[in-house]
Image 1 (cartoon, rainbow, N blue to C red):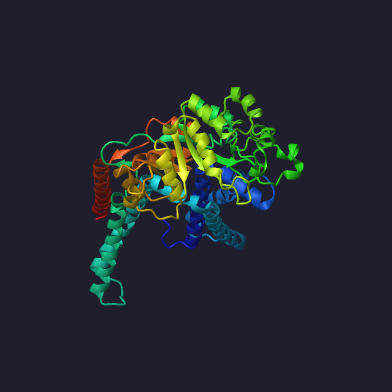
Image 2 (cartoon, rainbow, N blue to C red; image 1 turned 30 degrees about the vertical axis):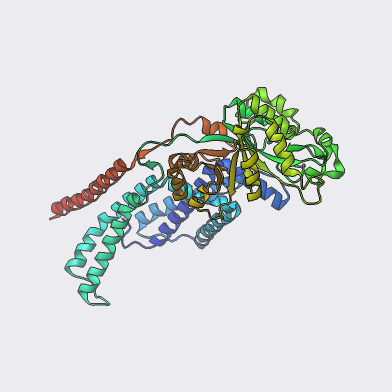
Length: 504
């Protein structure tokens, strides 16, 4: 269409800019459940709170519109005048915007840290559709190339090498490249392509009691968890200065309580430096209603009947949380936060916590995350019905055979581990709990891989899913791609042949 027309490179430049900005915007929109963590990180870094994710999305609408406008404008211009020559400012701007977009994408990956693997997971989830677009595009490209290939076979251009060597080298590379692209969907099928039956749906564990929908680590969050019928909730345990285990994640109380009002001179003090009576004076829920950090209240995702409960929420003791869990038949996923060695209960932290856990009388419903083999032996000897959980970071290596002999009952790990790891664990019938799974796409992948449970800030969204959005048997998937490839190639060749017959 644009053969022998001047300025074609700028059509390609604007199209490339459009695709890069569109990809960036689409990725950012797909990561909506993670926007709060992104905003929180930038707010801490820059010292100013704002909805940075929304700001970035709105800002990048400008280059998106700009690239579409100039792409269409220059295509029209080149068709009418056989050439196009954008102004110098538009040439510089298109290149600059492309560089900025790529730089921001790299920055986004770095900011998300180990969670940046979600980008690869999203590509994998949509890979079937991406492969379809790529293959269709290449087949369309094949159409105008057929005459050039025929010419090359009949009469090669002046070669650098011997004519036959150049001719067949090019053709071999060309066909190998096309064959590789055509078979890639079969070699690298997405996880939603399964063999046999779909594994059971993973249990849903509300992270800190569904931190996107309720004030975290409070009984109010437990009420929300119970109301949506999640299997259980994850809670973080610290110990007060006078030896009472309580629920809290942060090192300080500033983010999730009104400590600045009740104890203005102790805002930056460690949360475990307060006695339980001091902790009980604090409000631990009003901040969530006032700030609505995830927009879930504004968007009507939190029942209005719970807002009054949230307003008066306090910091619960471990005993109170366990009693609530017992009454509501909730699994308790316990993560321990041992105090520093200058704390009066440093040496007694674990024994004190396990005394409270054992007194609840729900050992079979308690999962305890352990980081020390001595404590594993302690739990196995004294509380054999509690589930001993080995927590492993994304960077940690783990041998499944060694794990089975270790005495642990479950692995607790990051969602970014390889699909091969999760599939192997499922085949070996090793229970796996995965943190923190907030995207529906990743949850569906883990479901098809046989993961037993997930910890999530979005429990209501995942609970509502009855099955993955799409699954397909591997044998049918392969047959479909083979048929589509054959039909596509045959159609291109047939159309080209019929057109050449007409011209002769």
